Amino acid sequence: MTDLSPMPDSAVPILKDGGPSSRDFTRLVAAIVASDLAEPITRHIDAGSLPNREGVIELVKQLRELLFPGYFGKRNLASNTLEYYVGELLGSIRTNLFEQVRNAIHHQSTRYGTPAQDVEQVAEAIVLAFLEAIPGLRAILATDVQAAYNGDPAAVDMDEVIFSYPGIFAITIHRIAHELWVLKVPLIPRIMSEYAHALTGIDIHPGAVIGAYFFIDHGTGVVIGETTVIGRYVKIYQGVTLGALSTRGGQQLKGVKRHPTLMDSVTVYSGASILGGETVVGEEAVISSNVFLTKSVPAQTRVSVKNPDLQYRNHQPQEFRQEHPGDWMI
Image (cartoon, rainbow, N blue to C red; front, side, top):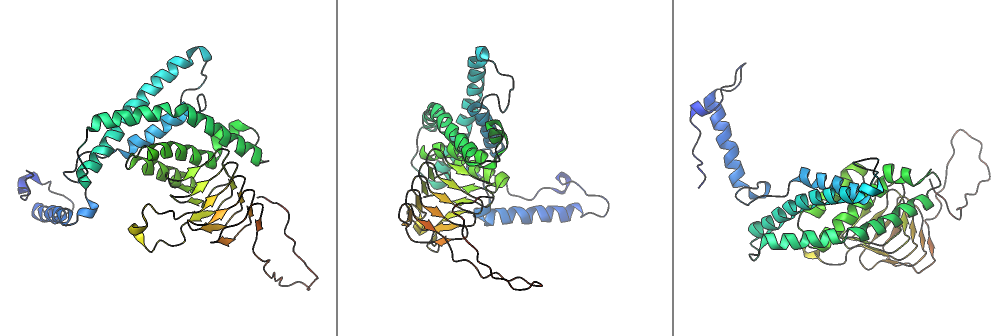
């Protein structure tokens, strides 16, 4: 049982240079402890180990090294030593992932009172299933790299795409997190996705289902919600939101399809918002910049907003007509 009695004055450091006295310091400690005990939402006490955020981020870095061998981590790899390298790295990933998954499952069980289970056995099964998915992850990420290179005339080569494109970083983390999400791992997938979000400005919920050959150009400000479904060969630009029509229902909407579906070969230009779980954008549709869309769109349809009236100050008026180009990019 935790001893909550005040610390004796002798156990409290006496602060110099005009700081509070030991008695004042003891009072402050007691007040903070009391606030900790009074507010359960913002404390994690007597609830077992949590996943370690730094450990999860290190795991992401190790997995990128495994998914893109020779690009990250150890350089100058050779084919004749690749098996040793992969074995050593995979062993480290397995150990780290097992620890984080075990802690996440144990935490969920103790904090929310879920039925008791063999945490070690469940964590081991999850880790094995995830590691078996790695060849498939590598295959689909190769399609994403190809889509980025094909879709961006500014790309010099695929090395540049892998090393530097924020969209590739974000989709790599998403595909890792989504595998763990499908395996029903608590906490860890969201830690991963928010790590990518913080670095790139691209917010992809780990529950979103995204097909092959996916390309996010530029990327900043992209939001892809939990129940979004995206087909193959889809391309979206910066500032796009694939969101819910309304979240006023809060937790009552958990598990409900709230976010749109984009079929194969859809293009969505910058600043567009596509909202609602019943909204379906058909194959090969093009959604132009700044469109606010809450209804389904048939296949091979172009949706655009009406041209704004442009005003030019300090110039003589001229006959002017602005045309929508057939296609454009930044």
